[in-house]
Image 1 (tube, helix red, strand yellow):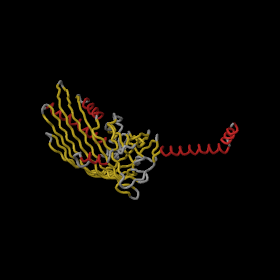
Image 2 (tube, rainbow, N blue to C red):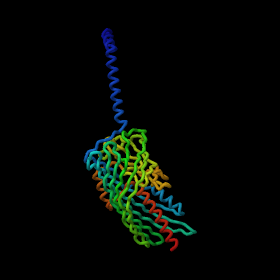
Image 3 (tube, rainbow, N blue to C red):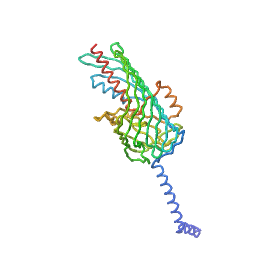
Image 4 (cartoon, rainbow, N blue to C red):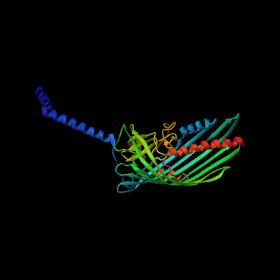
Length: 376
C-alpha cells in the first residue's frame, strides 16, 4: 500500500505533470483575463436596419424644478406651493445603412403639468392666486450617426409646441396660450463624437464641434388683455459646441424584456453649447454594449444658467439635482404614450432648454399678473 501511494505521489510530482498543471492554470488565467478585457471596454457597434431602442417614464415628480420656481418667486417677495409631473418617451430606429453613416428615425414626446397656489406681499398688501400649466411637445425627424465612431453628424427635426397656462387672482383669470411650429436642421462639423469609443471606465473626453442651425420657427402667443402676437423667425446661425463627458462606472440596467445589461454610465456637465445640444443627452446616459446604444437616461434636474457670452451652461444652479430616469420600455409602450400626448411635434433637441423656457414663462407671467392685479 505504501509503495502504491508513493508511486502515485511520485507520478503526481513528476516534472512533466507539474508543467502540465501549470500550463493549464496559466491557460485558465489567460482566458479569464481575456474575458475581463472583453467587459472592460465597449467598442463601436454595427447597426442593422430595424434596430430600435425605446425609453420612457410617466409622471416623474418635478420636485427639484418646482423648488427652483418657488425660489425664483420668493426672490420677488412672493411664495408658492406648487406640484408638477413630467412624462417623456423616446424612440430611435435605424431606417437606412448608408456608405458612411446610419440614418435613424427619431420620435419623442413630452408632457408637463404644473399647478398650485401663489401669493405676493408688497406694501403691506397680499395678493393670492392659483396656477395651472400644461406643456406638451413632440419631436419627429432623423439623426445621422457616422458608422466608424457613432458621432452625430446631423439632425433634421420638425413639429410644434403647445403651452396652456391659466392664472386666477382676486377672482379674475388670465389665460396664456402658445402654439409654435419649427423646422430645424442641425449639422455638426466635424461630427460630434459623443461616445469616444472604446468606452472605458474612468475615461474622460470632450466632444467638440461647430453646429450650423437652419430652419424656421413660427406660431402665436396670446394673453388675456394683451391679445395675440405672431412669431416668425428664420434660423441661420453657427455656434461652437463643447461638451465634456466622463465614464465613472458601470451599472446594471433591467431592459424592457426583463434581461439585465451591464451598461457604461456616461455623464456630462458644464457644457458650452451656444443654445444647441444633440438629442439624447441628459444628466447621465447608460450605454449598453448588448444593445449597441443608450438604453436609459437620468434627467438633470434644473435648467442651466446662461453665461455672459449668451451660451447655455448646463452646470447651472442645482444642476446636480435629478428629476428622475427614463427607462427601457417596449416600442409599443412608447408609441402609445407619445400618441396620447396632444400635439404634432417639436424640436426638443435639449430637454433642459425646454424646461428652462417653461420656468421662464411661469416666473415672468407671475410677475406680470400680480403687477396687473396690484395696479388695477
